[in-house]
Image (cartoon, rainbow, N blue to C red; front, side, top):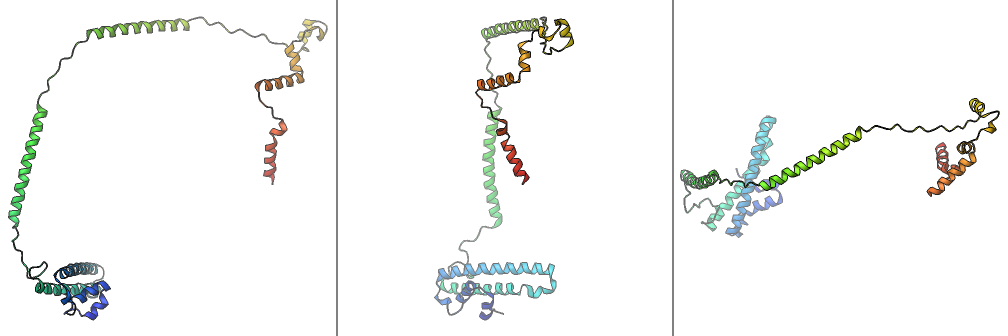
Length: 268
């Protein structure tokens, strides 16, 4: 049973419906052979699309919902039938307008196609010829590689060998001399370091008083001992070292200013 135009309006989009309407009796007469061929191409594409869609839905429905097998793909099957009828109407019109045109049911090929056995035989013959050519080239390359290469006799270099041996002898003699000098240096007797005499700073020691006489005034005091006892002299010497070094001395209360500020911030 053919699909009616009222049902086609419910199923198709605007572009699909326009193609279906073009295959009607009112508008199909305005198309020439070239336009009919284009419409056939488009209608066949839509027919194959909805036919494949309907087959896929049938397979899925059989496995998932067998009870809905009749209604699940009804829409796709109807659209496939609609476009199949559209293709048939276009082909009939094209057969009347141009009997020798493409995509008509009445046209036949002017030259029959080559049967399959003949095609296979010709294809194998062509491949065999190509294979023989490649094998010949491979054999030629292998023959070139297998040919022996003439060996060249090396030239003896006696002069260079003699100079090399002389240089090696000189180098060995130099290394032996260096090794002997190193051995002699290691076996040399080591002189013990000289001990420094202690500086006496404590003048109140009983041993010093007994050796020096009745009182500490009789024992001479070294300049180092006098310097160590004088804090002002130590401060002056330290300031002089800073001045000679070119450094600027920072006072203690200024150096600790950042620490005090950080402590105040932390206490908040």
